[in-house]
Length: 174
Image 1 (cartoon, rainbow, N blue to C red):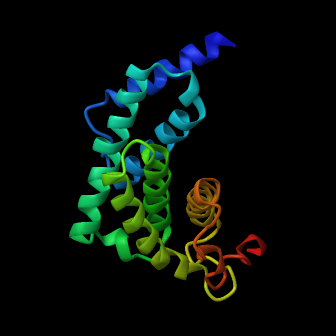
Image 2: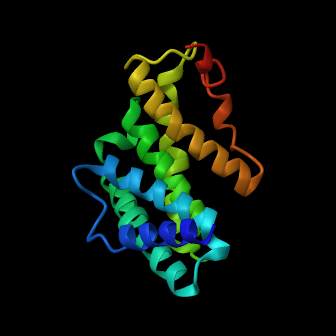
């Protein structure tokens, strides 16, 4: 229904106009990047060109560019084996893939950096799919991993072998 489309567009515009997406931590940046990118992708054909540009720019400037700075500085989560790694990288992958058709610069750089960095987080599933942080953080980390893997599969027809890391396929048993 048009009223749902109108409201969803309104919410995406509002999020795009936040001063930044980095409070209180980079987890917020990743979560907002993921949410806005999913909305942008789902509603793309119904958005006006003006709204597309506004939302795309927000994903790049408030999500991907801060991510690129984090990779460059090697923020603690970049090589971590816990939930932060998968959540932050998952958000960067989803955001990058949503805007990559229109922005190959920052989007490609963020995607490439996240695809390398997420391998550190995947090590947390080894050897048998268990997760040392317990079921709540396992759920959080796994959810963003699934967002990332499904986005890669839908965009490229591959998950780049990330699904084959030790314990990843078995983690559902956890």
